[in-house]
Image: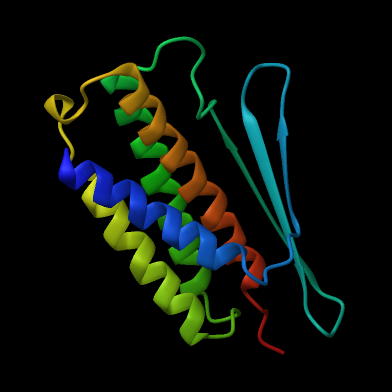
Length: 152
């Protein structure tokens, strides 16, 4: 239980630090089939626009959340992290200490979330809080992408 609370706290701290001075250029829409599509656009000083589009199944399941739902959403979170990491490591993205620190913190929190077991959750509220933390982490990863700058 203590570990779960630490993970939730760490996710909240990371999200708060990301939101403090970040402008958003990411657009997320929910499609008729229930999938979410996230489109991020970056334009460098030469006017070259890079567009990244990702479609995922819903992160917030309807009704009660099960441990299986959390495992599915964790897999989506890890995939999102890996995509952001791959984008950042692209030689067209300017290296930035703040982004590297945020990515390191995100990785630690995601790894801690991955160590949680079904027995760590005592109520539906626990499941919902963890699911909300995963959603917050995914949104925070989008904010990291917003902070990335294209090398000129």
